Amino acid sequence: MDNVRNPMSLEIAEFDQARDLETFVRIYNQIYPHMQISAQGWIAAASHRSGFWRMVMARQDGVGVGFARAMTDSYDPSTVEVSLGVESASRQNGVGKALANAIERAVAERPERYVRVFLREGNEVGKAMAESYGLRLYATRLRFEGETQDLVLTASTPPNYRVEPIKDWRAAHEVVRLTLRDDPDDLVAPDYKTFRELTVDDPGFVERSNLGAYYKGKLVGITLLRARNGQGEVFYTGVVPRHRAKTLATVLKARSIFEARRQGITNAYTDVHSGNTPMIRANEKLGMKRAVGLGQWVMRAEIAGLNDVRKTPSQ
View 1 (tube, rainbow, N blue to C red):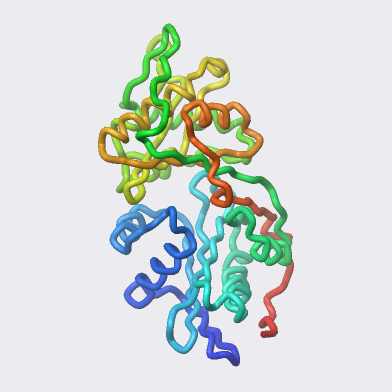
View 2: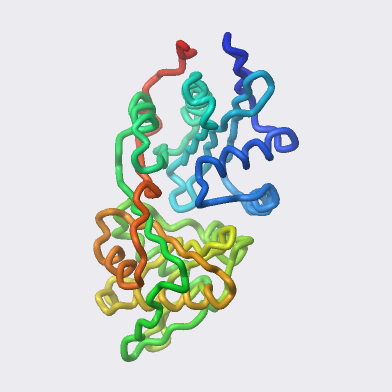
């Protein structure tokens, strides 16, 4: 992509790790204070990245003020996921629109079917911008969180089941495939290589907190947790249909967070679709509270149907 400048000395250019990484981390942490990342952590995660990935940076007078990133969605290879961030002091200067125009060019050329954008719950400006490109609100994901020392982590395993760390990751991958068949976000299971990148090969993998529920020796449910800057992200919990309504999701999450607490993790959080009542109740049973404003709006559109708004925005 050629560098793009406008009359306000705004430059949109390809991400240069040596030049832009510290700026990206600073802006990302400003926008997502609960998800603090480090340059070293980003580099470690990037080493496991696969699939399409593109990032552009906005610089004003040579200083980085924003980013836009597009990448193949980990859970759905038919979808490109886009994220965009602008530091607070530059949000009225057309930076966000210029970044969105630039990354939209890259997305419009992709063979995937869908584009998806995650926005902070309540971000009306971002929502309006996404709608201008043809995206529509598709789902709301709620954030639940709690201090691990305050959570209720004593749920009892139902009869005839046992819970223990996952050993067979092929079997765990199959559970993800089965449990995502009726996922309210229409997610699909990643391939096995990507699944490992999200779990055992992730730098934040916490072995004893990645648990399986077994019935007569067969894996029927899992919960997956990874460490993120001292916090425990419970990023997936699923139970196959025949074994639901037996409190297994609650038990799995409780045991997972309990083990994370023993390893020094002081806060745990998870995101859940607003329509997934059983999982919301499981979080509430643990004592997790909804973190209003930290949830996400999920915007989606077919790439072929994106609006052509790629003209240089007026300032």
